[in-house]
Amino acid sequence: MKITDVITHQLLCDVQTPFTSSRGWWYKTKGAMVVEIVTDEGLIGWGDCYGPASVAKSVVDSLLKPSLIGRDPFDVEVLWEALYNKVKDYGLTGMTISGISGVDIALWDIIGKATGKPIHKLIGGAFRTDLTAYATGLYFTDMSRLTETAVEEALGYKAQGFPAVKMKIGLGSMKKDLARIEAVRDAIGGEMLLMVDANHCYNVPQAIQIGREMEKLGIHWFEEPVSPEDLDGYAEVSQALDMQVAGGENEFTKFSFREIINRRAMDIVQPDVCAAGGITECKKIAALAQAHWVQCVPHAWGTAIGLAATMHFLASLPECPPCLVPQPPMLEYEQTYNPFREELGGDVFSHQKGVVKVPTGPGLGIEINREILDRFKVA
Ligand code: CA
Figure 1: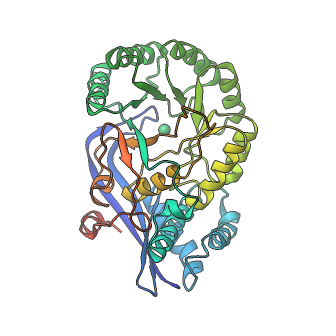
Figure 2: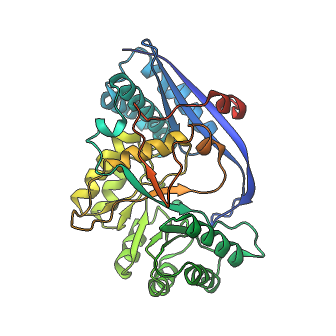
């Protein structure tokens, strides 16, 4: 089998309610970059690149595509290395790796379709076919009703049966953050897991100080307490706190994660399959984590394609550590309106009380709705 074409689809939609996090930029639109790889046998594979869509499109079109035409999709790791070695002189991390990630996912989709197997069957099998999902939401929307809206939203997820919810923090005042976290904790009760995501808005002493207070509220993990460049800071925060420190959504390739894991800078690493290097690279990152007894719980914020790829990857992750009552890695299930997640791949992701079934069809196990692709395509 040979690759005959690599087509990129840059998508854009309006969001229903503009929102922000501690990063401070308001999301009024959502973008996506979908990769379509075409073969001479008529099989098509789909991939998803994380990050600014126009940049990812340019990376795939100009840097990666020429190296893929005429190649066999089954040589997925050979191609990964070829692409990586082609782009490494222009930036070892970031958007070039995001481009490779989308290509890698599309290649696995083709391999699955060619063999009639879901991707998880090709990467070691499923340790679990039901994934426990946690709801990601509680962004900052109405700045005059921050606590009220967070409580209302969290109670909505509880009513839907989600066993866990992750909220955004980082309001520029520890007092405000803690009051809002406490209100959500009080509202949902002690049984439901509650995680917080600071999107790296704190410095080390602030992160440790608020972390100690959050420990009293039974927060399950503290995501991105400090800036991703500050690995020493991450290690300090992780050592100072009893609670789990998570991060890694803005890290790329096994080389970045090697440093994090070696230095025990995080208790939970969160590679994104659409950013950190695709399924091929994330399996290696997960192996590095497992070898150091660090949990791997992937970040997911993409389209139906990215979500499906994440689900196959999650299915293939061994328990860490294996035991009578293990804590399987949870699926990040973003809850803001996104037609690229909800409509692009059909209705395979609906959850039952926070449990989502890993797709079982060939490849990613989803059918792409070209009408949605055409409706939102801007380039
Ligand atoms: Ca995050």
